[in-house]
Structure formats: structure tokens, C-alpha cells
Image 1: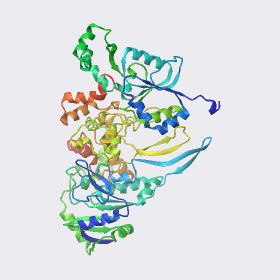
Image 2: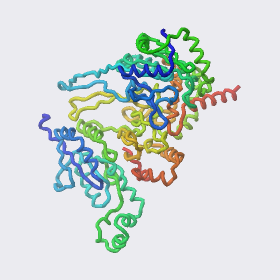
Image 3: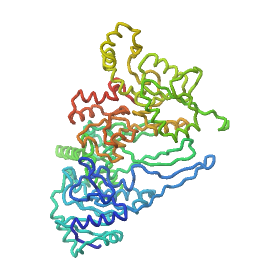
Image 4: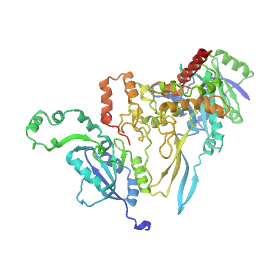
Length: 353
Length: 265
């Protein structure tokens, strides 16, 4: 691994330099209080300090909200010719926070599972990640440390770590080495010492803390399938799916054909779906497996803290970015739901002993 | 029977009380309209209903039903149509004109035509035929409706999707999602984050959140989503600083029938 040091100004110069040749996306202010990943151009104001997790996570660059999978054309009675959609443009996502880096690693696991998803990996292999290690929680909502994503670096090409008023720049991959070669950086002889300094400068604890370690949550959640807490936490739920759509580890999609008027040709598309929407679990014949909003909420929470951790091996699928709680207009926060269940569990255990 | 011998399906458009903006929205996608004409015969596109013997495969009804004679005409269309589709917010739920249902007819009359006219119309029933205006009704309050194309105006993509489905013999489907879904997919900042309020959480999607994309808020022109959590929404609007009267006004702008009838598919 090659390590460098530079002040933020030179790092930003370097990102601009990269953006002159390749599409680079960076979190930029949007609206009154939000951020979103936008393409860097000459006019972009790039800075690292002020940040709130983007409205939609950067996984939207790997699984777009809507994408065409293939085109079809009728070539005879009952016979169709398929043309797969191919898209291969190199892109760089820069300033990606550790929560989102972990989420992308989780998506790598998900889309490699079973039938390897060619659409995902086509983009993934063509995407370079430049991470940024947070020196402080982005706001009072974050619980990334507690969720186990704060120090995530797996999958990154280049990691930027603020140390004092400078940045430690580390290239983790060959592609990262090639990218950093164009920067005006000083070599760093002792990256471990710099990393340690970064950790020492970080507030402790870092952000909100779940009331139980994430590896204990699957067992705790399993004990509370019928908890009345599930109902309480959906009293103000609109079933609008926002929590799913802004989640960096929600990846469910729906597939549909958009045909020409005469039906002879068209395209098959897939677009994001959301398990909090009322009809997500409705099947042919009309039965809805999760007609009750509390059942949908429970399913969502257990996907993030139990089902998927048990299926894959990278820890909780909630990365603690807190987008869902921030973007929910009625303030339903998965952090509160989990803590309520944990507290209830502890109280029940205390009462039993 | 060979394809070429099959008669083209007959499509008709009928106007009631509305601005005809929905038909304009359709005419704005000229290229698709021309393709459509290859596959169907458009047999009515104006308020002419001369040949009573006509049968229609798909009748699109635009506008709300405001007078008893309109209701009669609508029943007649229904009787001669295979499918009836309510086209746009007026036909689907009465639109803004349905707010007049909450005001006494004489008061409405005075607002529009003045005090003198109101006084005269109350004594002279022949004076003004608009007195025949009874109550603003959606199409499905008068006759059974097969499908609704929501919005003010309706969305041409949904129109085409419906026509394609009916031509192909499949079931048209407009997923019951709130506007938030499309709004989030467009990566918009939530208008509540801007200190404004929105009907998006309880409004039927399908418009691609066009108003929010363009810097406005959702006013709910596509009607309330079946099963929407209206109590939570009213509470949210209250917490966002609206008075109860303002909240009702917000709901009544497009969704005035929310209290009496749910605009479900």
C-alpha cells in the first residue's frame, strides 16, 4: 500500500484533476439541509467538513433507481430476439463515507450470491471508490460506530483520513495507486501512526449507541416476534417506503416490461421496490403476506439486524447511517425501534431472574 | 380470423365539466397519438353524441358531473361502452370544483354571478339554466368506472400504459404507492426539510413527483392513496404549523371527497 500526506486543498485539486478526465461524483449540498452525490465540474464547491448523509446512498450508482435490462423484438410467431443492455463507463465515487463503503461491500455479497448479477458487477467493476474517514459524527443521528461500519475500508480504492489539518491518503488497490499517482502529495513514512492520531482525535463514543452489540441482536429480535412494540412504532407510519429507498442496503427491485403500442417490441426494466409499501408482499391471487404495517416494519428491522447478517458474513446490514430516521417525515427511527426491543428484552430478563 | 380482418377497437372521448387539459396533455405527445391511430379508431373527440347506435370499446370521460342532464348522458355512454375510464382529476374525484359542494348553492351563485343574479335566480327558475347545477360528482359516483387515470392533468404515459394493456388483453395496473416513492427516486429534498408541507405521503403516485421536481410541493391532485394513514398525516401537518382549517383546506383542494368517499382503484 502506498501512503501520502497532503492538506485538504491539494486533495481537492487532485479530485478536480480526476474529474477533468472521468466522471467523478461527490456529496454536495442540495436544497436547504441535504446533500446528494453530484457530478464534479469546474464550478463545484468541494469540501469535506460539512456533511449530512446524502438523500439517496451512492449505491444508486451501482443499481440505478430504474434501469433497462434488455430490449426485445418479435421476430416471428412467439419468437423474440433479446438485446442485453450494456453500459460500461468508468466512474469515480469520491468522498464516500465508511457507512456507505460498508453498504457497497454488502451489496457485493448480495449480488454475487446465487446467480451473479451481471448488471450490478458491470457497474461495480467500472466504479472506483475514494473513501473519506469521518473525523466526527455527521450529526446527532449517526450510529455508525455502534452498527460496526465506522472503520470500514474493505472495497475502497483510495482512503482519505483526516489527521489534524492534513489528510492521510492511502491507495488500497492497483487502481487506487494509479489514481493517486496524479496527486501532488507528500509521501507518508508511518501511516499507522497517522491513523492512530486520527483515532485519538475522534470523539468517543462516536455518535449514538445501540443498547446491545449488533451480534446479539439476531437472538434478541428472535425472542420478540409478537411484541406490541411493532404496532407502536407504526402508528405514524405512512408506508411510503422512504426508509427503504434511502437505505444503502435495501436492494429489492421490481421487474416490468414496457412495450411498444403494438406489443412487437419493448424493453424489460427493473426499478427499486420497497418492502414498506402496502402491496410489496402481495402475490398472484391477491393474498398479501404482510398486509399489516407492523408486520412490514418488523420484516424491515429483522432484515437489517437479523436475517441478512445470518445469511452473509459481514455483520449487520444496518450500517448506522441513520438516513431512514432522518428522512422519515414522522421521525420513525430504526435505532429507537431496536433499542426499545432490547430494553424490553433486558427488562423481561431482569424480571425473570 | 386474420389480424387484418379484425375491426379496430373504437375509442371515444367525452367532455363534461373540466378544462379539457387532459385531452391537451394527450395531444401533446403527437408521435404516440399517430401510432395509436394505427391501432384504434377514435370515434369521438368532442361533445357530439349524434349516433345513438354507436358502441365504444373504451370511453374516456373527462370532467366532473355537475348537472342531472350530464348524469343522464353519462349513463347513456356507460350503457354503450365496454370500458369506461375516468380521465383526469375532475372525472376521478371532482377536482377543485368539488369544493363548491361544501358551500350552499345560492352562495356559490352569488360569488360567481353577483348578489342581484342570486336574488333573481331564486325567484325565477327560468332565469339561468346553470341553476340546474346540483352537486359536483366524480364519474364513479354516477356510473361504474373500470379504470381511473389520475392527475391534473392526467399523465400521458399512464394513458398509453392503460391503452396498451387493454389492447393486449392484460389487466392495467397502477401500483398503489405514495408520491414519496417517486420523489425519493428523483433524489429530491423532502419539502418538510424546507419547512413546507406536502400531500405526497397520502397521494397516489404515478406523476413521477413532477411538482416537487420543479420546486413546488404535492397538492394531492391524484387523489388519496387507498388505506393512507390520514390521521398521521393531519397530525404531521399540525406539527408543521398548519391550523385545522388550513389542513382541511389542503385536503379539500383536490381531495374534497376524502371524508365521504375513498378514491381507491
